[in-house]
Image 1 (tube, each protein chain N blue to C red):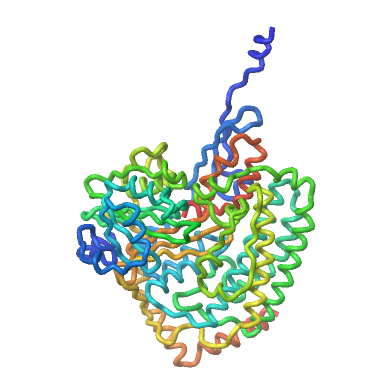
Image 2 (cartoon, one colour; image 1 turned 30 degrees about the vertical axis):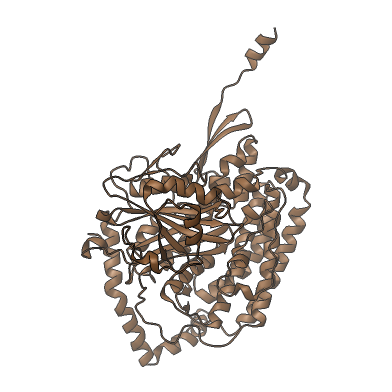
Length: 221
Length: 374
């Protein structure tokens, strides 16, 4: 059983689900959000502040338009696609994540778009950034997303015959041995600390630290 | 008569498998070359032989346990990968790192850049046919730095020394002396490699104008690090988006001119000199003090949110993207491997060249396949 199956239901935490517009009005100005609004007046962006970048949510129907503008609009000029990936929210769908950067304007953004769980399709962006090629192939095999228009959407990292599941989905469990190891680590986490504490209390750890190497060398000689 | 002559000389394209166990592939990597005689018509890279699912595993263990996977991912620049991971967590959890740990991190990372580039110099020398000489010279000095890493961290390769909040334990008392000693070895190695390769006629013949990529293509493919700088594009995360305490040090960002294999080599050689400069400055002002914040809970809990941490690793931008929903485990962890993107441009760089050039191009990307496959 995977970790996610144990926990009752994944809440979307720091990544608000599309449809919650309450934050938009309170979002501070002077960020990359303003430039995107100006460049793409027709797109319904929902901004959020990440720890490193501004995150912009938008509907998947605008994906090609937004990515094209992000690259070609001189105000945005984001020629560098750092990576693209997906985040699985199970029944609530999947987020596609595009991390962009502009070398000339020195600004970056995280673009996010939600695709429904029953229709994991999105247009490719390989025609915008060629560097999206392998990233899309990886996301396709790991999450089962179809990138429409991708020139060569074949498995990249996984074996060709591994078509029955998509490993990075949250409903795919780890192999039993890995599950077992993780549980063991979890249950032993306190034990190691207890041993260290006990050694420190007895003053044993200090002697091990300073004396042991010399003593060991002496014995060998 | 002429038509008959042409007909007789007509050739068919042949597919040649290079790898997965070819010595020049620096790991387990296969590329299918479609060749017309000696000329490469097409290249299809096949990766994934070393895929271990580091991302999936990281999502199923807590933040501290996940650290080890970054050593195993980027096994030639472990400190950079660790730094990236712990800084991303620190940013998300709002942990302040003490001065002393910051300096330890910078010193070790820059020494690590030198060892990583020396590995490249040695291997690239072998690739180019200067058999073993650069390899042994570079590795003799690299070993001294490697010994310091082992002495400090207790492990030769899988350090797991940087921790969220600082470092695992303090450095030995003679640390500064030992670093100075290592810098001596690094200077010697840089001089040796420079003497052996930079003016070497054979080396220049094998690398000049080989594997050229233009600046526009490099940016479009998402190349970073020395691969991008070799095209003449001045971009270094340590300067442009300073992380850790890199903004305190004075160093230059070397760039190439033509974006060929020779420029990539020259950029890396100069970067080692700059790393020496940074370490020199860092040990001069190396402070005393604690190595971890006063208040560090044993169980590391990270608030909900998301972060993309990135560092300038020896091979380019190494990044960790974390989506947290609170708690002890990341909800999603993505590793942006520098070589993964750098390798994508392989086709652009090799098609039209000779089979022997493919070895040079691959060597000049300085691939770490554990990082590509993750």
